[in-house]
Every structure is written in C-alpha cells, then in structure tokens.
Image (cartoon, rainbow, N blue to C red; front, side):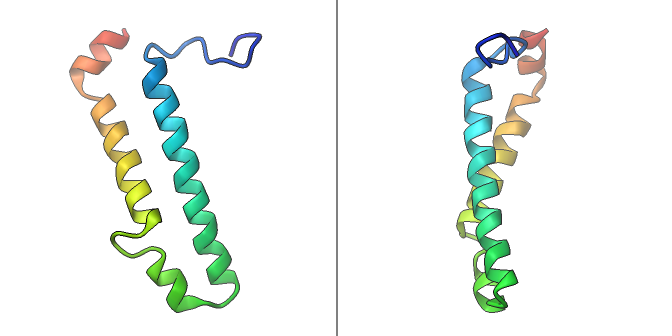
Length: 79
C-alpha cells in the first residue's frame, strides 16, 4: 500500500476494485446467514444459502471473476 492506502502493486486497478466490492458483498451475505443461524432460524438460514440467494450469487460472481483473472492472458499482462 502506498501512503494514501492505495494498493500500488496491483496491475489492474479496476479488477482489484471489483474483487474488493464482490468480496465485501459476499461477506455481508455470509454474515446475514450466520445471524439467522445463530438466531436458530434454520430454515431461513438454509434459504439464504440456496441457489439464487444473495450469498450464492455473490459467491458465484466473485469466484467467476477470480477464475477469469487467472487466465494465461491476464497473468502474462500482469507480469
């Protein structure tokens, strides 16, 4: 990180920002699931993890972005 708190070693700033955003979205959804589970709202927690849920969609989008960023062309560009 530089003096402004910016990551100065990331070759693709837009990709970095998108990953951060999706990662935060994923953790927010995961936290909601945890709150439901801790409140013993088991069926609601299961529904909050089901396909099409916010957690599922955020996870799929984050994983897809990370996988796409690891393609050989992206890695070569970053080197």
